[in-house]
Length: 386
Image (tube, rainbow, N blue to C red; front, side, top):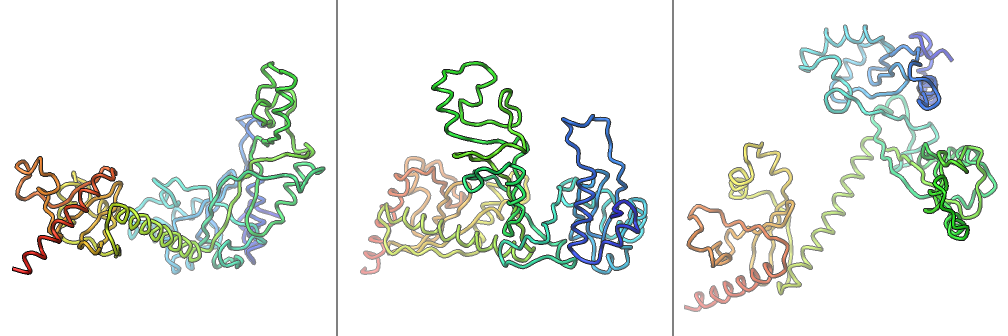
């Protein structure tokens, strides 16, 4: 495969599978293990912009171009494969004036520094819908990576290299051994204790872990998995862009339901009954308060975007709460004044001070508020009778 010329790259753009193989070949060519290869070693790859969506650098790493910067019309007028110089000229002629950016600030990420973007192998499916990838949608992919402890029991008798080959066949996510090849086995702890081993090079066995840096028993790819072995794997799940957004919305809804239930229980524990919380837009007086008390020169929209407002309806009356880094009571319209809540400071409260009370998290504060609401409710009933 010719992966270092415009013509060779263009020939591999017929399908997602061939495109993936192309990018993988460039990545493998340019990848260096700096412990094994001298620092002065450099890759001889030529950087290219591909399909108006990707930039493959001199080390073969794939970086995604800013998804919002280019229109489909822009991409249709580009060559499928462009050198850095060709892309720079195209950008400055057609894009820079409209976008207000320099050509080198086009990668996704802050200040033009794009994150390394991994393309999923063709057999890996979307973790949400189970669908596959194509050249039409592979630019709109989101990846989630994490670590997990992995029980190697099913692979006893196989080398780590064979285990990695088996893991590569999985379709739900990509799995990789951590670079240091860490292996954990509880028996190593027991052996350490039984032998009373205190020499420096065996100290890592005290915790049950060994890796490729272990001085007496380094782990290599030819290590044969034994009974009780565990390892730490890095894994990546991939999502179509719309599927990822759906997942994030679902997660946000679940989190909000859990938070609402926790808040409801919190109010019921201090005595409120028939508690119903309803999320509403920030009222004008809360926006005014946020601009005055939380602004401190910052953009009010940035601040208010972090605030969630709920109207709380209970048997004892209705009031508002603001969820921020801490819980805030909005006394506006509930009959309880700021002076009632802070009776000891009543004379010091300015007349124009908004009826907003930040809670420290102590249950006593909510119990105090509950008693004030009950008192106000009784007062309102007496006035109604009169």
